[in-house]
Length: 172
Image 1: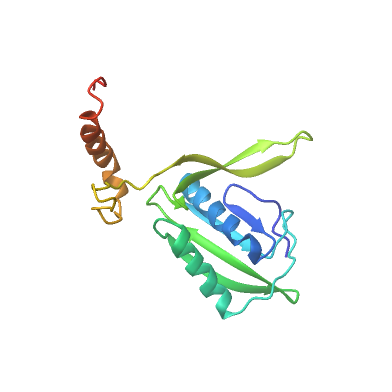
Image 2: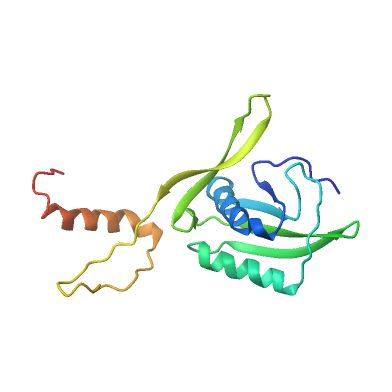
């Protein structure tokens, strides 16, 4: 089976060493197109290279996603075989954007190379810091927050209003 070239919602990763790239690619696709199909064990032209996959492979992928993505979309990870070569297909759908990879947000875009080929990439759009307050003793008095992104605007305004006292020259 030949998958053809990469596209808006289809991406290829050569092996499991590129798992971080695959997950970043997935979040970038979800942020722009709300679905993604990632194939691990397939080269950039769409030819199956094959990997050695087992049940632990699915577990490793899901655990890595859980540690790197802010909230998981609907994900289906399956081990497939074609012509005696195994590859992993990760299908994801998600409408609760934005999805972050390691606290950074990406979107999937294309650009033209010098020889007029289309090349896909994940472009960084913005990042987030965790907000915490340090007491006089040097320890944090706020535990890590799970931020509801639908309330991000309100949370940001709240942070700005508290910061205003420290910066009276700023006018809103």
